[in-house]
Length: 140
Image (cartoon, rainbow, N blue to C red; front, top):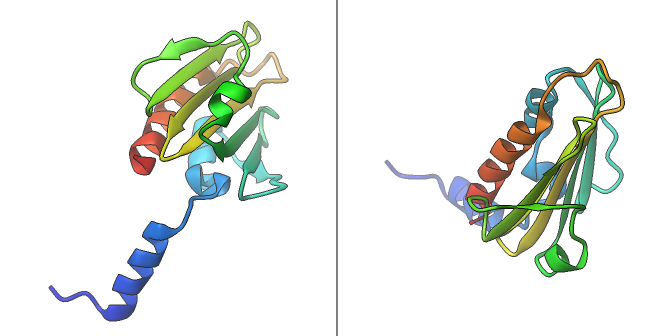
């Protein structure tokens, strides 16, 4: 099958494009992770993205920085995660929030869910880990 020239050019250009934070985890994936309709309240789509659950008010953030930021800005009380990107760590808080930080494709990616309502019983740690693995696989 022959690929039209403009499609091949588009694929090459997209392959060379550095993914923005909002491209790492798009609104559909954020909606699935948060388990509800979302509101996108992003300030800077290139480096950070923020989504808010319309049901529980849980806040999901995605931050994309250069890889060296992994050691400069670590998440609090981390536990090593072996199977995400080049290196990774995660944290689950007693309030039910969670965060994960990993290095892949030359970037340090930090994702976190803050859970303001106690009625939100969703366990975000495994959901963040699954999303992080998917992102790391795409970036590597």
